[in-house]
Image (cartoon, helix red, strand yellow):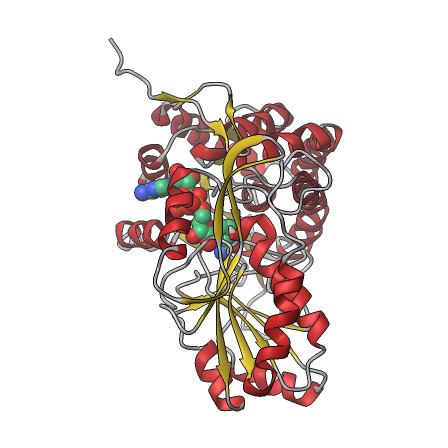
Length: 460
Ligand code: NAD
């Protein structure tokens, strides 16, 4: 008798009376075997033919855009307007990836050496893409499309908290490729780990939390030719300088704190404000935060959906119950729009807190700085380094900040959450390595191979 397969059912975080369909873990070994079998022919297929498969997948997904967006809203609690934005990013990612792949993967002739020479990009082999719950389709899809374009079969292990919408995605994408080229493996940590550490898997793209990313990096340390790309967390500051447009800064800070209920890697969780602005800015920020009221994620008007689950709610309550001075008091609310769910209201705490732990809830710390050096030191005091936003009208000052801030994404007068797919995306320090989350990742999905032809090589 085979071992019992673990199955689970999630509740919709915005409506705890609604149970999503049951999902069961997928056996890992057959999926890896199939991916290995598919690898050679997929990597040798002409690039244009691989692109045709990707375009077909793009078409299938575009045809179900609204259903998929509703699936995300229902399963993760992300407001439907945000979920539609995520689907837009999923669909446009195919065009960007194909464009990147055409540029990055073509053979390049190298002149100036002793022999005729070329550099070409060779597929790595089967790849694992492990996804988080907060952007259940967009982040995984970016890595999936890049690996497929580069000629690597992909096994996608989505978050168990977004397994149903991942299944809908896979149902649309899988038939666009030859057997074994794209596969979905459902499950949790055990299945994720089993796929990633298998030596036949030659690349791992992991988007998720720091502890899991670290554990994977430790386990894979000796297999150094397996590419491990990590997209981890952030502790992202907004810096409000003396000459800032305060309305703009307050609006952007409120957005950065509240979008996806604070469950974004690039969420704003620190607000650093020039001392002289303190009172004026807190007033404006408190007003802006009021735009974010908990509501049913399926309604178009909703700006703030629920947290993902009970564990996230407990983490929120733990922070909210800490002894602290609150500028805006965070609060859990049992129901919104008549539905019971993991709803909360965002909060702002005065003073410094630990910067080496991601909060991943809509609560930010508010600190004042005295001068430029002070602001930089505060911003850089976190070992994470994903995003930082500076609010100033002074271009020179902005560039001084850009030179000093330790972050992969730097913004002038924009929220920390503003990250279009047209740019690379990724962090420094504990926020990860490589750039799997944005433009150009396809480069890392292949390996460079140098080829030289010796004299008289091809005489018969
Ligand atoms: P998580 O780390 O709990 O889980 C992520 C995925 O890893 C899930 O699919 C999970 O099943 C799987 N997993 C768990 N243990 C594993 C193991 N030992 N081996 C392999 N896979 C394993 O993260 P989450 O709660 O789903 O997502 C939130 C986290 O993701 C936050 O820390 C957030 O900052 C981060 N994130 C980062 C980015 C980025 O681009 N930097 C984007 C989105 C989310």
